[in-house]
Image (tube, rainbow, N blue to C red; front, side, top):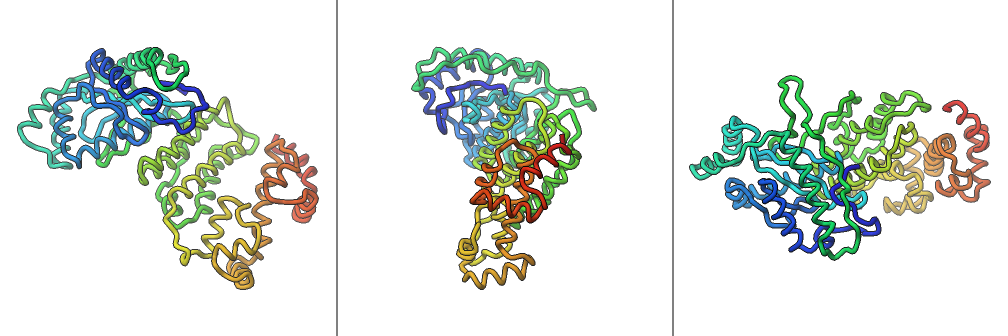
Length: 444
């Protein structure tokens, strides 16, 4: 994972403002802007500026005077930095106003805490009319002042922007390495070189940009290998209906496409289709949710070394889904709870409701009324339903991990261990150890 700044991992929930004195940040930024000739600003993880803009173009200064447009600018900054953090490298993109920027992520360990945004340029003079037309259409920005200021925007080729990104990476690390900050730790050149040339659109031969289309939301970055399709509309519908079972089924279909056999392994990059779908939905809920989801993705990508198997993929992707549902499911009033919403919670964590009493309390029903209703709607007693869900997890853990049987039993709420062995054998005809020996050989 490429990074701008890598601080000591003991820093919990770091904030960019607390790591380096604001005056030092501003001085570093002003020096970088003078060195590169580009407009630069530093923002936190939700796009809020932590410095004053350096060498901002007159055009952007004019736009940012309007609170409505300034909000779009900040949203672009947030999404640009977030996408760079997810990709682990600088990216070049078009902002909502049609200008070209690039973002460099700032990470502490695996935590994304902010970004350096630079640019406010065009790639060609032909983009000028297109940018003004888009602004007139979307934002009703017009007038001689805007036209004149747009004509003053510098033209810089995409390849040059990537080269400048390399320079900024080096300048940032060098400056922070000698900067007297509030955090006593070593700063080093922890960010590798940005790619020297932009990816190319094979239709035109021109370097590609990641465009902000309408409302500021960066397009997904293409990967060189095909990915099974994830239906975001279906995923969103399941999310709004609190139907995590539906999204878990979709995940299973996705993994069946990329890993049809449990013994197979894949490159971690083949999960990007699923990760991008989750992040795309998280963006619709705002930068805070998107930031939390992206930190999970960034952290996991940093730990992934080499090929991963089906079980590893499934555990990770299920955690992403559960996180998304916990953060984004619509608020639920107590009177709106039902057997379906209870099952949704059990699907997230099969140990969350282990007794009839706790489940009945969730619905504010008596235990007898709850037991009857649950069996009427599912065909199973509540205890049997929850037991089956936990045994499904136990089977996966037995076959695909080396955890002791006692630990698996304890983790899934089966106590004592001999009770786990007894109910497991009743369902499968084998003890947990026998099941592990038989099916581990089959998937090896």
